[in-house]
Amino acid sequence: MKFKGLGPEWFPVVLGTLSISLALYINYLVFLNLWLFNAGKIIFFLVIAMFIFVLISVVYRYASKSGTLKMDYNNPTALSFLAFLGIIMYALAFFYSAYIGINRIVAATFLYIYFIFYVYVIIINLLLNYNLYTNKYNSSEFSYAMLVPSIVIGGNIILSSIMLIKPLESYYTLSELKLIYFMIFVSLGITFFQFLFVGITAFIYHINKTEYLRSVPAAMIPVGASSMIIINIMFLPYFNYLHLFNVPDYMAVDSSMLFFGFDTFLFLISGVIAAGHIKRRQSMTVWAYVFPVGISTFSDYMIYSYTGIFIFKYAIVIFTIVLIILYIYSWINTYLIIKNPGV
Image (cartoon, rainbow, N blue to C red):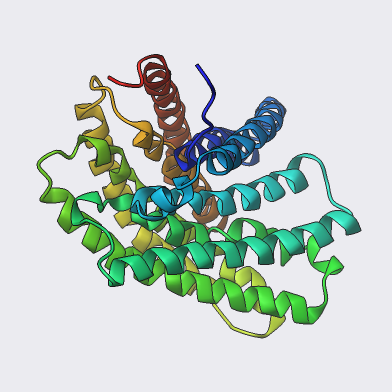
């Protein structure tokens, strides 16, 4: 059978695998176990190879068959999943600095990656919302997958956070640092309010579906959205030295604790949903179970690093275990889809 390329639904597979590396790295920071660091590093290099293959395959699919790009543009889930490219690039840059190191050339490359994919994700977000506002989509296609572009725009914090603190911040001018900080606030506002409005819209249409199995895994995506908001808020006090905005530590911690409660509530609901459908074969959206849990380990660590509350230490371990289970489950589903694509 001729290889036809891969669709944007494969980007979450890359991000899900990268989430394993993230969880191991977070656990390394908590427990200072070098084995966890090295395991995360190995997975990081495997992800690079996987990402290159998936990216080339996605481009090949668009180039080899005319009309494919337009078809994905007219599908809210496919268009939303194209935004994953942005957060994958942010995360790869983050882990490059953590596992390999930085120099002036790397710092300059990070700056280009940050601005290019920030604009890229904004464009995806604009296209999606334009189609929503002009009723170009069938409401039966609405799902929590539409939250992905808003999560990804907030996900710029993964890269910008290391760019605004030592040692990377020394490679940039004050104007560049302030511009990045300004863009963090802009993206956080977009993420928060789209989380409310798009999330409510997706919820209303989801509960009115008669055939909802295909979109069930997407119920975990709001966990990723709320966790990404926590990560953004918790990093803001680090940047007060720029004297552009001022976010006190206590305000960041208090606000994040409120979101943590909601985040945990969403996770429990999504976990029950996942358990209730675990014996049923699902589509590639099953990978929507994975990456939000990875983001949650990061947000829990941010609160733990500030407060030292032991419950977050245990939460990180629990989220990591759940992440690995969901990752294996998603690969089993993916194998079944590849083996019997028509079933």
